[in-house]
Image (cartoon, rainbow over the protein chains, first blue to last red):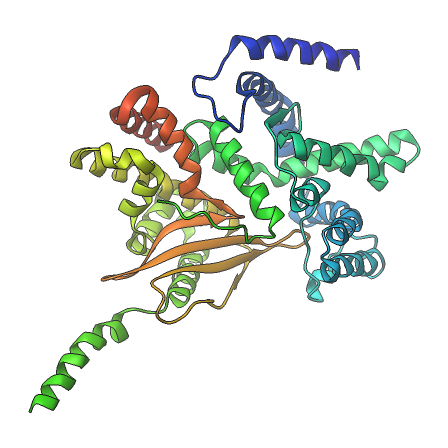
Amino acid sequence: MRLVLAVLALLSAVGCATTGDERDPRDPFEGFNRGVYAFNETFDEYIAKPVATGYRKVLHAEIRSRVGNFFANVQDIFIGVNNFLQGKFEQGVNDWARFAFNSTIGLLGIHDVASEMGLEKHNEDFGQTFGRWGVGPGPYLMLPFLSSSTVRDAAGTAIDWTVSPFTEVRPIALRNTLYGVYLVNTRAELLDASRLLEEAALDKYVFQRDAYFQRRQSLIYDGRPPREKLE
Amino acid sequence: MRKILAALSLAVVLLPALAQDPAPDALVKAVTLEVIDLISKDKDIKAGSRAKLVQVIEQKVLPHFNFTAMTALAMGQNWGKASAEQKKQLTQEFKTLLVRTYASALAAYSEQKFDFRPLRAKPSDTDVTVNVRVLQPGAQPVTIDYSMEKTANGWKCYDVMVGGVSLVANYRTEFANTVRNSGIDGLIKDLQKKNASMEKK
């Protein structure tokens, strides 16, 4: 914990030194956020990305997909809860049915049999539920290790983690192993996306931030946000 | 005679529309499947040749995009301030950048299953969105939405949204920032530099 505080203090110092030249009203802490971003980039370059690349080389795509399915299955429980909280009962039932089928016939979730049965996977979290309830995103936040977020979505993520069944797993060593595998697998799934970002963006920080806002807005409205016509 | 003339002129007006313009959703489906098929059969591309992939996209996909419209949308208000020559250069550089990005995206998705959604639009509509979904096990499908406009030369795409993120809209802030700091020529230079650095990889 002391280490985390020290890192944060260091970052805020870095943040103050680099003030963004143009302020985006959605990103009042841009200087600080860019500091965290630089830290994340360094961490990613030297640790997360090499580990994820190695993981992808060592494990066959089939096995990686099973690992992803295992975690995705457990997440369906709270995806369902969030659908219920947003009044989307049919979708919530769908999510819990997915969990029931995948946990049993799908062997603890490693096979996504529910998708083959036509029960589609959804994407929900507490940040989206708050958004659906009318809570605005608040200022953009670049979180250490976790990357793009906003004040609203960071609060949502805190709840996602608190209620996650994985926090209950004992012994602690097993829980931490699960966390570790989850993070590495998730990073490995994002290798293609991060290369795309690298190729597409003039300023990766800005590109990623704008994409995050668009993506979250789209997710909150399940792919059909009120459309702003570009002119 | 007048009737025949009337019928003839009607036919002249209608025929091109019937003959050359496939419906936008049919167009997207045909082009996507053709490109995916080419990718899966081409030895060079399978071996990782980015140049060959870009070449396929330039031949098969480019004709269906309206890059001037895309660049104008990404530039926003600054488009009106650009000279004709600047507009030409911006469009050229932006096109190169988008083709490269599109090539990478396609390479990443080429082994997935595609689900082409039926078009929800009236026949009289001239501005439609074609929805395609990329299905992947254990994850929510990735949506790809093509915004398309009817032109004299058939349907042309002017924006692509991936997972709800509009490519064109996403460049707006970047472009606006660069223009504010170093002008339109500065933006052209940045795009050229970016493209040159991608060329090397």
